[in-house]
Image (cartoon, rainbow, N blue to C red; front, side, top):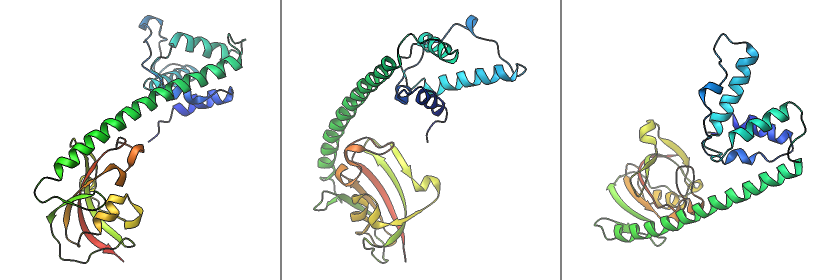
Length: 246
């Protein structure tokens, strides 16, 4: 879910013809001393409360985004811009500074992502190699691994079917990233519109079965990852096939 307040910041920067991305990369700001803070309470004027709320929420929503923000320079720029005073930098200098900052931060993030992807590839490969040696683990031609926890007796779906399942997904370190059991709400979906490991794996099941799947990253979310799932992650799913939906 996106945070609401950075939109205010983005709007302000867009109005100045500047890139809003600077507020997508920041670190905790150095707090100002309490003695310099304006005293605001519920009985303050509407204008004062609006001003304080705008400033506080903008700061709070961006403290994890811009980690190296010089708050004194920010306040100075805000005051001069709001007061329609001549800027200390030209708009071209501001644009190029923000674009350079974004470029550098994007490069840093890319390096971190690539390092994490390489680390996860190595860990995933080692995990699957060891897991394949365990009793009860079967490996398909694609590299998908699975074990039967409970064998059902119902019909077996094909890729074009819709199925209803309960499931729990974890990373190889045991971190649970999603669970229909926790929500107490089974999910229904077309079997050919999910990750490859699910499309292949669920077709091996009969209604009433419970399988555990060990899905290589190329049959899951690959180098991009997804939400809480890091890049190149091997995923483990416990899946219970409830029914085929006609």
